[in-house]
Image (cartoon, rainbow, N blue to C red; front, side, top):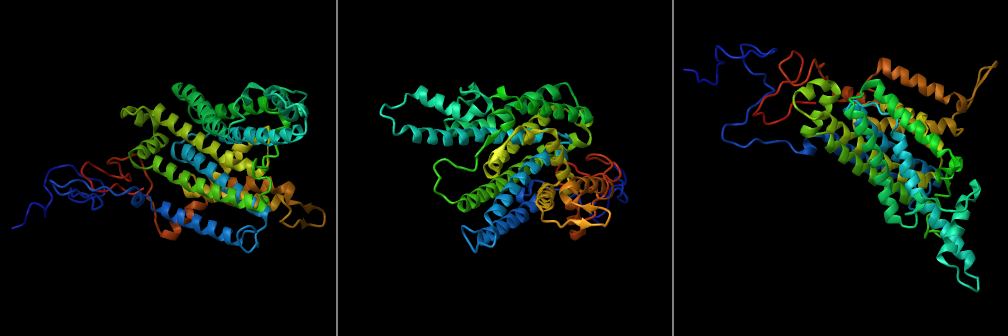
Amino acid sequence: MTSSTDTAPSSGPKYPGGSGGQRPPAVRRAPRGEPLRRRSFVARNPSILWFLLALSLFTLGVTVLAEATGTGLLSTSFIKTLGKTLCLCLVAVAMDVVWGYCGILSLGHMAFFGLGGYAIGQWLMYARTEQIVMGNLDGQPIPATPQEISDAIGTQIFGVVGASELPAIWAFAHSLPLQLAMVVLVPGLLALIFGWLAFRSRVTGVYLSILTQAMTLALSLYLFQNDSGLRGNNGLSGLQNIPGYENTPQATLSISFFWASAAALAIGYVALAWAVSGKMGSVIRGIRDNEARVRFLGYHVESYKLFVFTLSAIVAAIAGALYYPQAGIINPAEIAPIASIYLAVWVAIGGRGRLYGAVIGAAFVSLLSSWFTGGGAPDIELGFYTVQWTDWWLVLLGLSFVAVTLFAPKGIGGLFDLINHRVMPDREGDYGPDTGSWRTEEGTEEEPPR
């Protein structure tokens, strides 16, 4: 006598791919009366541990080889390059969340990156100039009034554009905590307002990409004006001179910023990975795959898109606030639309839809760009023409983007699928009974594979 669990009922739903009405073996029910057991966040995202391990080993290796803390095999300038690269990896991860996971091709995220740099740059320039002014006034027989000090600082900063007064947007430049708040609030508020106007109007696809590019272009053109309050085309300079650390060697400052950049990348990676996992992550990916179906299921699509867009803008601004003190200067050219296009290229080459792919793409292209444009790559003499990589690097980058799009749409990150021998079936829809789609139902003790 066979039990009821050994044979399938003669009637009932048939599952494509199954036989005789039996459930697919990948779907398992929890025993009746027992609570469902869900895998932890780390168990569902093992790549996070691998990424953190690789980042820790890389940070340790650089620390051992740095001039300030180790053997000195790595120069201070190269340490700064590595620190800036980690910041670019962080903004690439933010871009991957909004594009690779939510399906919003934003061509304006480097604008938020630049705004974060301008916010921290205001404090750096003000504090450094204040020290210089106070040093010059120390020998005066009559102490200067606060207004005289403010006028002297304004003349020192804005004399290059023919002005002598601090604009209103510099009202908080004297306070580091307030300017750090501006790093988050200004780009976040801009993204919130722009996203709310665009998403409530249900602008999608290429039209949304054009709108983000137009926003970036408008902001860049405004900052080029001398009366913008941010010194126009001159930008903010001398940002590598950290107030209060004048006697600290640049080697020590560079490794300190490198550590800060590595920590920010680790925290940002984990936070964004959490944001795109679980049920919320499923909804976000569903919006990318079929926005109309997600809206029909009752989800407020605009709220999810606005959350992802604003969060990624804030992360991009934090990355910019760490990047420009290492670069030493920021000007409106850093916010030009071409910078955001480069960012999309990095993510595509690394493999969008994979956070580690965005990191790989940004690091690979950024370091390769520094090598080609910095004179590291030797020129190629063809007899009738000399190939100089400083002129041909962008052509090579464009060809690489086209090649990846046509022949390797999963990017460099897709190589990990081959290494792990994981062949992902083609999805023909969202979760459901369609042939080739992932199947799930209530009572399963683990989520279907991703």
